[in-house]
Amino acid sequence: MMWEAMLREFRRHKLRTILTMLGVTIGIFLVTSISSFSEGITYYVNDQIAVTSGLVTVVEKGVMGFMIQQSEIDQDLVEDVESISGVEKVAPLLFATLDGVGSVTGTTIESEDIIRGINIEIKEGRDYEEGQKEIVLGYTYAERNDYVVGDTIKIEEVEFEVVGILEETGRDDFDNSVAMPLSDLQEIADKEGIISIMMVQPLTPADADLIEQAINDDFDDIQAASDKSIMNSVNEMTSQLNLMTFALGSIAALISGIVIMNVMIISVRERRREIGTMKAVGATNKQILLTILLEAVTISVGGAIVGVALSFGGASYLNMILLQPIALVTPRLVVQGILFAAFIGIVSGILPARHAARLSPIEALRYE
Image (tube, rainbow, N blue to C red; front, side, top):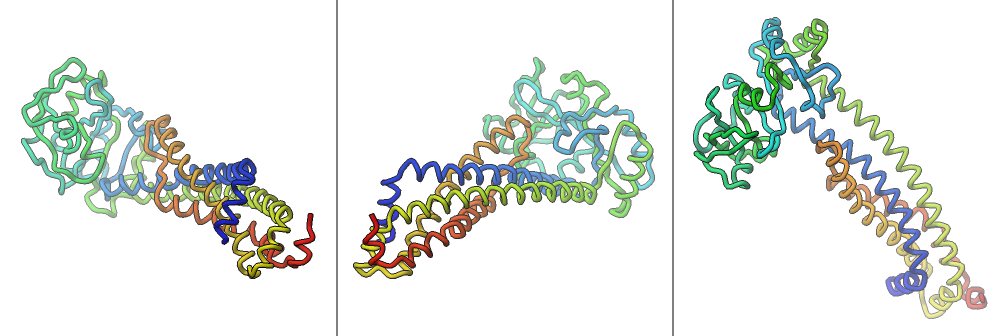
């Protein structure tokens, strides 16, 4: 009976129902989209720290963490950083986007153990050698493009031989990677003497903070951050985003709640005679209350589902513009958005529902 009454009311006032859902859709879309930045930043940083754990990251001063591919550092600074007390090794890296392969990473042979980590091995073939125009591919990249060891790839009009394929790691940054010697990448990318970042390996974990401070104090063109500093910055940023999300969510909840409550009050008034008939044939106050609440929650949750679905497209569009996977709509955000909408529906529908449940059948049947 409840479902029949609800569907009958929705069919009777299609435009009003759609417009009410639209208000919830916009609110949930905005809340989920902003929250996706917080989720994406946290996921991205945790993913990176899993690789750079214990290392100090050095980039061009003023470059944000998510735009490190735009960083440009004089390679001569590598020796200066290596001379800092507590530094065991420095790995220089260059990132470039090249015709034929897309994003490519270049580093020295001596730095591979820092960059890949001790648990990532070459599944087929061998590692590249300096000056030999050789490359190593990630497992997924090679499989997707049907490359095998011995194939030749033309990059920026220069032919490179595939000499190795990494084992599958389950990490997108390694499985889709293309790597070559630093000197070769600098040559074909026209960035002689330039690197993007340095990964500094301390002698002991306790040296990381001291190295970070020394680089930030003694160098004008570069900045350093340890894992702890990066996480502190991320926590501060996500706290601000969460505060913004809370404020926006509160406004969305207030506006959506008022709209739904107003619509449900009007609906109850229009259906007083119908409600009286339902009571006359045996419907209880509880059944009437649940029927009205069900309508309010269905409208709210329906709008939320559309809003969440749109947020996936919004996040993809933002990532495409920013060229970084910063926005991420996680299952937690989906559930959170729908539960938030259900809460709005319950709160905004309780007053009209109680009013409908308390109607006297005799007075309701007299209503014209």
